[in-house]
Image 1 (tube, rainbow, N blue to C red):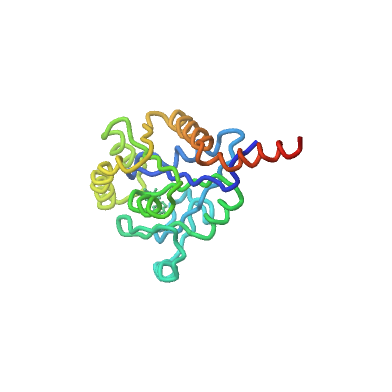
Image 2 (image 1 turned 60 degrees about the vertical axis):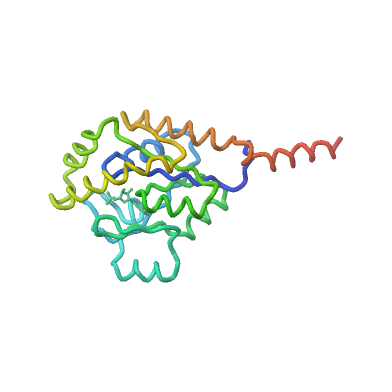
Length: 210
Ligand code: 5GP
């Protein structure tokens, strides 16, 4: 039984190459979860394995900039030369439906969400060692040398913002990291400030029936 009607917003963030999308996918592969993924919009080109509407909505810069002007993003950032953003309406709709909405976004965007959504949960994913992140970025083989270096440089500054998050989770192994995130989500769900109103309502309802 649920004691919270509006869904929880869960922001998974961390440096590029830490494995955010692998961990997010492992989270969504878990049985009996009630999570919903917010598909982002981007102006970067699709990688060969990526699908429109599943991994991202791929749009032109012109379309993206129009949406910025119209205030259609909950947050957006320019990450190493490409735009990335979270469509606001969809997130609000899913939260109103009581879904647990997961955003998987970089650090600038996460901090924008932090300023707007006071009761969201912020998780910072880190590699077990710095080299793990560099090796991962290199082995992925999806970026040019220049872009790879830009992502490595960017990760250096992203690390420093870990203290702004509620939780730090080490991605030593994808399924372990996903387990830890699920434990955080479950615990956050049960927090008194999220459940007390409904709980009181329930108790009062029972009293009046006696
Ligand atoms: P990639 O190009 O590797 O898919 O993503 C680059 C970075 O952008 C990653 O750190 C990824 O988490 C982040 N990202 C993906 N979607 C969004 C979004 O909607 N907003 C923001 N701010 N970052 C995003």
